[in-house]
Amino acid sequence: MEEKKGYRNKLGLMGWLSGGRYGIERYAYTLHRLTGLGILTYFIMHIFVTATRVQGQEAWESIMSTLEKPFFKIGEFLVFVAFAYHALNGIRLILTELGVFMGKPQLPVYPYKQSTLRQRPVLIVVMILAAVVIVAGGWDFFFLK
Amino acid sequence: MRESTAWYLFLLAGLVIFVLLSIHMAIMHLDSILLAMGMGYENVLKFESVFARGKQVFFMVMYILLLGAALYHGLYGLRTILFELNLKKGLQRVITVVFLLAGIGLFVFGAYAAIAAYQMKMI
Amino acid sequence: MAEQAKVSAETQDTEQIVKTVTFHILRYDPNRDAKPYIQDFQVPVRRGMTVLDGLVYIKENLDGSLAWRSSCRMGVCGSCGMFINSFPRLACQTQILHLESNDIHVKPMPNYDIIKDLVPDVMPMLMKHKSVKPYVIRDDMEELESPTGEYFQSPQELENYIQFSYCIKCGLCLAACPTVATDDEYLGPQALAQVFRYNRDTRDAGNEERYRLIDRSGGPWSCHFAGACSDVCPKGVDPGFAIQLLKRDMLLHKLRLKKRPGPAPVMGPPEKAERRPNIPEPPEPTV
Image (cartoon, rainbow over all chains, first blue to last red):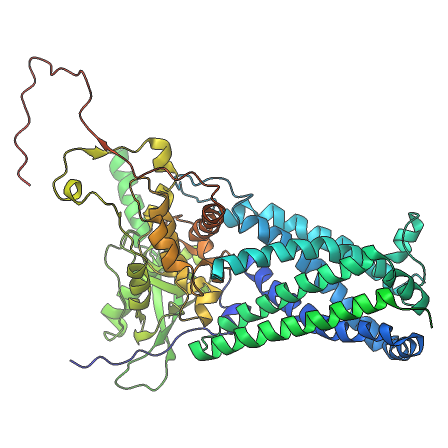
C-alpha cells in the first residue's frame, strides 16, 4: 500500500514568535534572540567607527558629528536597552541552563510545580533590574549633559 | 572542536562580556551618575577623552578582550540561529567557515586599531 | 433513602445540558482536500464532558468522517494529544467547561505532519526517541539473559531520575517547542529527557555512548530553555528541566568533575539469613 505524505504542519518562524499561549519564558527567549541580533548588528558597525580614532582628531570629529544626530542617539539608546535586557537575562540563562535555581528532580505530584515555575521569581528579578538599568541609562542619555 | 566545547566557550564569553561591557557601558552611558559618585570621565565622546583612555594599558587590554569575546559570542549566536532553520549540511559548513574567517578578520582589525591607538602620538 | 436521592441528583446533574458550544475543528482529507480547513459543529455540553467526549458526540451524531487518535480516555496512553484553544493538551484530560469559552478550537498538534483531520504523524518523534538508545545498556550479557538477582538501587538513586520515566510519549512537548518548529534535526525534549533518564539510572553504563550520540548540532545545545515543553507536559515529567540537568552533567563530565561509579551491582540474597521453619521453598524458575 502506498504511503501518502502528510500535510506539513511545522510552525516555522511563527513558532519562535508565538505558536500558542505559553509561559513568559518562551517570549523571553524570543526577545533574547531579537536583542542579540540588534546588538550584533550595532557591534560590527561600532568596530569600524571606533577604529577611526587611529586616524587622528579630524577623522574622529567628522564621524562623531554625523553620529550626534538624534536618529543615531535614539538608535544608541535602543542598543543600550537591548544590552540591559540581553545581559541580565543571559546571566539567568547561564545559571538555569546549568541547572541552578530549579531544585532537584522529585516525584511529580499533581498539580505539578515544574521547573519553569520554580525559576520564575528569578525572571521577575531580572526584568526589574533591567528596567532600573534602562531608566538610569535613559535619564543619563536624554536629560543630563 | 565538538559542539559542546563550542557551547561552553560561548557561555564563558558571555560572562566575560557581562563584566567588561558593563564597565564600558557605565563609562560611556552612565557617566553623569558615575561623576556624581566621584568616578568616571567627563565628555566621554570628545577626542581628548577617547585618546587619553586609549593610551592606558587597562583600556587597551579591556578593549581587545571584549572584542574577542563579543565577536565569538555574537557570531556563534548568529550561527546557532541560522542552523536552526533547516539548512543543508554543505551550507552549514560554509557558514561555519565564513563566520570563522570573518571573526578572525574583524578581531585582527580591531586589535590592530586598539594597539595603534595605544602607541599614537598626540597630533 | 437519602443516599438514593443524592445519587439520582448527581446523575441528573451530569445528564443535564449546561450549554451548547461551537467546536471549530481543523479538517483535512488527503484524498480530497488541497489544504486543511475549519469546520464548525454545535455540541451540547454536560458537566464532566471532556473534549474527547465532544469529538465522540460529533462523530456519532453530526459527521461520521471525523478522524482522531484516542485509546484509554484517562490520560495514560498518550494518544489524544491535540492543540486545543491555543495550548497543546490531551483531549481526554481537558474539561470543556474548564476552558471557559463557547468556542473550542481543536487542531492537530503543531510541528507534526497531518495524516488526516486531527491525526498527526508522530513517527519522527518515535524515531528520534529510538535513536538515543532509550534502554539500560550494560556489559554483563549473561546476567541480563539469565538473571540471578536484582540490580541494587537505593530509593535516593531512584528519586534522581524517576520523574522523567513517567513519559507517556504523547508528543505534546515537541508541539510546544519553538526549536522543533523550525529545525527538523533537533532531537526534541522527549528524546533528550529520556537520554537524561537513562544516564542518571545507576543500573545503566551507557553514558559515554549516549553523550557521543547527542553531542552534535541537533542535540541539547539547540535548547534555549523556552520552557514550553515543561508547561504542557500532562504527566509532570518536566522535560525542560531534564535537558538543563543534562547540559550540566555533560559539562561536569567534560571537566572530569563528576564521579563515575560503575553500573549497579547485582544484589544477591541477604547474607546469614535463615528461612523460617514454616515457610515453603519457592518453585523453580521457569525462564
